[in-house]
Length: 64
Image (cartoon, rainbow, N blue to C red; front, side):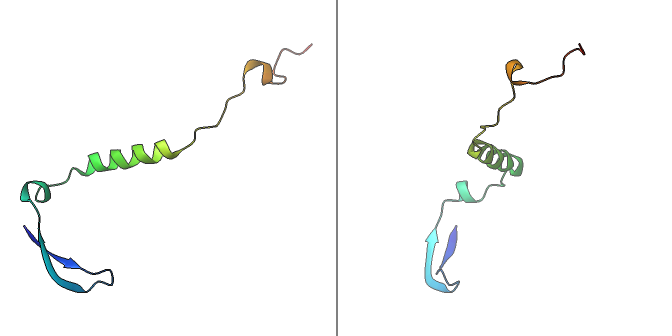
């Protein structure tokens, strides 16, 4: 497959590059791409939230 090369400002550079068709002619699996992006973003979270333990909870017991 032959592709044109563009400069950063969007104009053509006059060059072209030949890329293998077995890689760039396939139909992308959109759900797999979605899962990969979601996994990446989930792993960026720090996950430092904490639930209170029994000794940290005040009240909520039987009325004396």
